[in-house]
Image (cartoon, rainbow, N blue to C red):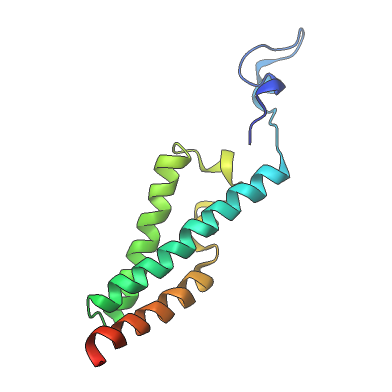
Length: 125
């Protein structure tokens, strides 16, 4: 998201104070959209895989819901740590609560579909 040509990392213009240099920020909406799409793709796969895990593991009721929530938070933290280098604002412009709850309903529906499918395939048939 940061433009390397914007000279945000060091050199200040003559007569500019330190606060003016720190407040500059380069923002590209296309890159933001790309970042959010990639996060959504990873979360969609997470919903499918965690549904398979919960179904094969025989989890029912609140155990399955707890599995989904734990895996959703785990994947969000892994993305934050490995891909974003612990810098959420530079990649998404979201708060922590917004980052954790974005598309949770879509992921939850994929999770429930594959959870019930794999549970039925393994334990009912």
